[in-house]
Length: 217
Ligand SMILES: Cn1cnc(CNC(=O)c2cc(-c3ccc(F)cc3)cc(O)c2O)c1
Ligand SMILES: [Mg+2]
Image (cartoon, rainbow, N blue to C red; front, side, top):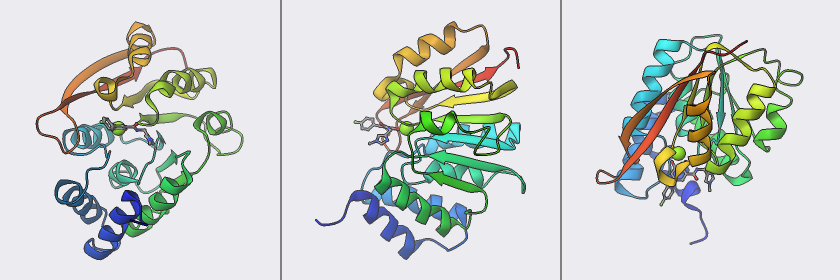
C-alpha cells in the first residue's frame, strides 16, 4: 500500500474539507470513517458529550493525552474561547505529524499545541516548561493502561483545581479497569458514566467517564 491509514485519511481531508473550517474537517473525517476506513476518533455520541463539556465548562487550559490524528483536538478547540488553549500529547511520531496537518487544515494551530513526547515526561514539565498553572479539562484517550499512571501524576503535580473535569474515553472498549476503580474510589472526584456507541459502529457499545475534581487544590 505504501501509505498508512492515517496518511490516507489526511489526503481525504485535504481533498474534501474546507481549509480553516473546523466543522468541515470533522464532518469530512466522520464521512471518511463511515465510507472509507474506520479510525479511533472520539466521534458521534462521544464527541457530542465532549462538545457539551467544553461548552459548559468554558475551559482556559486543556490537556489531551492521545492525539492520534487530531480529531478530538479539533473538536475541543473549535469550542474554546479566544485566549484558551489545548495541549495535546502524542507519543507516536507518525500520528503527531498527521495531527499537526489536520490542526493546520482546521486553522486551529494558534489554539492547539501538538507535543510528540511521552505523556508522563510532559506532565512533569507542564508548570515549568509549558507555562501551565492549572488544567481545567483533561481528556484521556491514549493507551488505556496509562490512564491511571497519568492521572496520578497530574494529581501529584497539583494541576487540578475544584471543578476541573477529567474525561476518559474507552472505559468499556478496550477498557481501563484500573483507572475506573481508582477514579470511582477516590473522594477527590465525582464521577459519571455514560453508555455510548463505539465510534462509527452502530451495533457496539462503549463507555466514557466524566469525573469532576472536588478535592483539595
Ligand atoms: C495505536 N494507538 C495509539 N494511541 C492509541 C490509544 N487509543 C486506543 O488504543 C483506542 C483503541 C480503540 C479500539 C481499537 C480497536 C478495537 F477493536 C477496539 C477499540 C478505540 C479507541 O477509541 C481508542 O482510543 C492506540
Ligand atoms: Mg478513544
